[in-house]
Image (cartoon, rainbow, N blue to C red; front, side, top):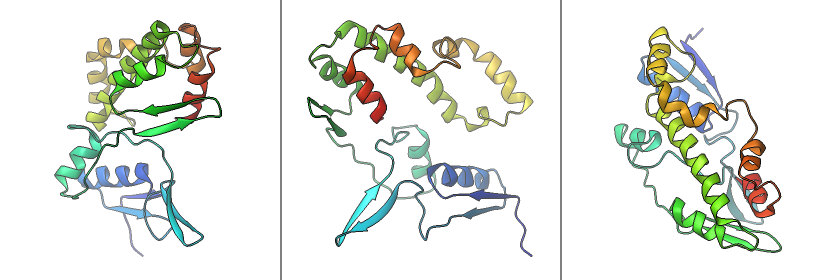
Length: 196
């Protein structure tokens, strides 16, 4: 009977990342996947002789110094990341929005939609950016993610002020953030948030 330190179930991005990190730390890892290839919900299907990629619409962590970029470089994976412009186009029956890779350009385009409150949108996405920036720092040092060691708890305490943008919204739904900026009734924002 074979043994391993850890068995990771599922070779989606989360399972692959977990297995890779555990192997980096010296664990003997077995990665199990029900499909014949990795990717999880980012899978492939065929229809009418064509092959389609399905799964996550947006993928992050690819920027310089971010997790997937770091692994790509460290493990010589040879994956080339190309940024599209627009990244994606959100379409409804009433409007469409080409989403550029630059966050400021995105907010400007969003603010040009009919009925938009540009100041409220800038404030909402400013809040979102503050929370995201605080949380992305955690992924730069995975030892700060659960399960936490005593040392990790102490490091979190030392970083308390960097979590200030997050504290107000912890345990609260996204609808509270939207409401706090007076955007609850603006349908384009709801459609966008439902899509991403």
